[in-house]
Length: 288
Ligand SMILES: Nc1nc2c(ncn2[C@@H]2O[C@H](COP(=O)(O)OP(=O)(O)OP(=O)(O)O)[C@@H](O)[C@H]2O)c(=O)[nH]1
Image 1 (tube, rainbow, N blue to C red):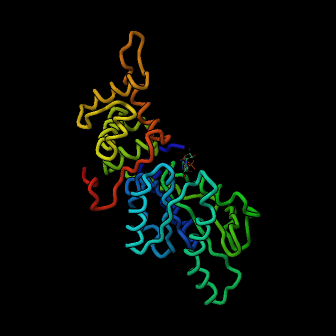
Image 2 (cartoon, rainbow, N blue to C red):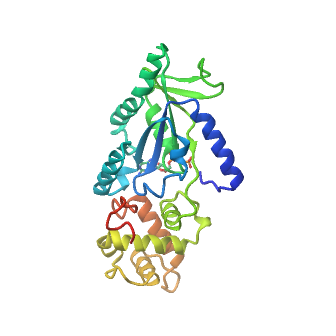
Image 3 (cartoon, helix red, strand yellow):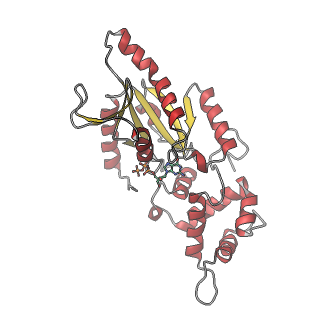
């Protein structure tokens, strides 16, 4: 679901998230492994203050594994728990649960020290649109024994999923608003599909993506689209994409709108390979 964000909507969302956060011990922040900076909400640290924090780098199957490793080291260096996963597959489920349990352990200890033995650690998932919140919740809840409505002690109307003994997940994720003020971030969000296409001109989004690709993966541009010169003018690049992908109008001219869509869909589906757009701070590509 793509959402248009207005100031009033943002304020309401923030209030709701603050309400929900009051009920939980652990905040699981879901980021897109291809754009860990651009997919972060600008207020998240402030919002989740005091909660045990786990960062999940989702869609790791689409991201460059080497850069993902750099991101893992980066977060660990800041003392933040982090795990790269692919929520669309079941293979990461075990390590995901283990990471959540580890993150929740201090909360359980706290309840125990206070003499509250039967209190579960409660978890909430937060992330911007399209980052994979529902997929992750379904993956985690998949084999969970029960979904419990109105469990005593929980806020009425909220659904909780028991993931394991002493571990409950709030069924409703917190939908955070994405960054808009940062133009690079906004264009990368649009490239991944997290911001609605009609907010941006698709030429602008595709130009920025082709520029990123020409820096990160010039060999991909050559192999997939026959673009030899990464410095080439964007219009010429799109022309080459159109010819290679058969996006042609009657008469043989390139249908540039379709060629642009082809680039976006190739990138989003992983057809261009595993590519990360946001480098760790200080990395060679950061300011390119
Ligand atoms: N390749 C890949 N695709 C994923 C992964 N996780 C989610 N997706 C896809 O990303 C898209 C968005 O996933 P959702 O789970 O609907 O995202 P959401 O954050 O709940 O989105 P909103 O409802 O808009 O807030 C879907 O097409 C998913 O199949 C992943 O780990 N890898």
